[in-house]
Length: 71
Image (tube, rainbow, N blue to C red; front, side, top):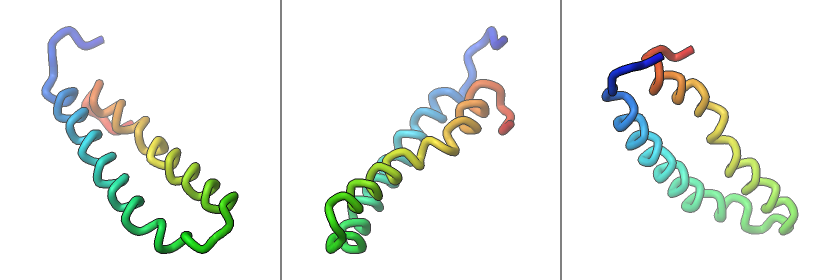
């Protein structure tokens, strides 16, 4: 259990926000041109997957923020 503040938490939060902004901009820029002609149900499925996929690496990142280790 951590008893003193660490620099990793504020830096990690800023990195997480910046990374999500970059990810969102990339998806918003390129996805519509790639899937714009697809049926609505397929587009919805793609956007749901893209909206959830960023969560996958989040666990290790949060562990690093708390412990300083990646696993």
